[in-house]
Image (cartoon, rainbow, N blue to C red; front, side, top):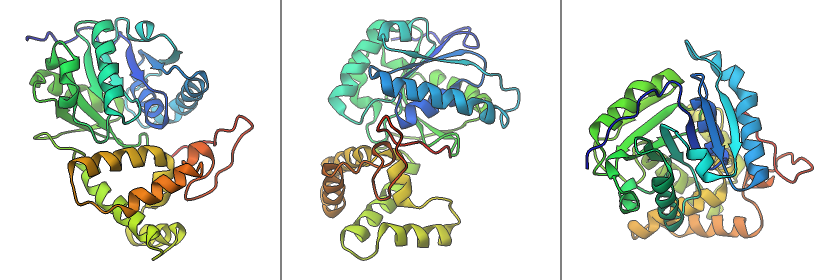
Amino acid sequence: MAFKLPENIETRPIAILGAGTLGRRIALMLATRGAEVRLYDPDAEVRGAGVAFATQQLPRVLESIQGGRAGTIVGRDDLAAALQDAWHVVEAVPEKLALKQEVFKQIDALSAPDAILASNSSSYCTSAFADSVENPARLLNTHYLMPPRATPVELMSCGRTDPAVIQLLADVLPGYGLTPYIVQRESMGFIYNRIWAAIKREVLAVVAEGVASPQVVDAIYTQATGEKNGPCRRMDAVGLDVVLSIEENYAEHRPGLPESPRRLLGQMIAEGRLGVKSGRGFYDYDTPASGRAQETPR
């Protein structure tokens, strides 16, 4: 089915679905060209924290973007209102296939017919959601890492994406302070995450086997690589529940992966150690009165 690229994208809103760790960071980056960015989340506390984080960090991010202009970041608890006239919609909900498939059915029904629909999934290809969308020519993966510190965005077709959609995003994303990379063929885990998954899995195995503590792992890693944060701190920032969901999806599609990393994550989650967002993970974090951990900007 033919797809007509969106027009007037400079003034039309953008919608981000999910105000968690990555959703709020995507909203932050996409609010740097003057337009309205709508951050949708049914959880009022998460939505409010997401809007507050993005709004607070926006002036600092704008300093590094030539020609950047502050947009408006607003929270929405009504999906139809969030999607109204948006030219671009980014899904950033939890890594659960059935949930994402249902969300894309709703997005497809409620969004403008010329809206570009994208998933920020770390482990699911949008080919898995293509049947949820009437016109898959407008559907693709836009996989963000951890902006504003890490600004690459991987663009990957659902198998039926109009090449002009990918090219449009490749052309406009640099204006938001982002660096697009086109994935040449479908790949579960994309480019960077396949490399990171191997590192992460071995780190979890080292800790699970008692070879070294998380603190020692991070110390040797940061000293050897020059990175600011080690793998355990990075997993805490993402959320150990998210890390486990991704690992379970890899294991389902790639038999033979070691079980000890998933067992360790499951045990930690059962103990309420989800990382920064719960105040405890591999490390302990300062927790405000609301019960949610303070998110330290990176």
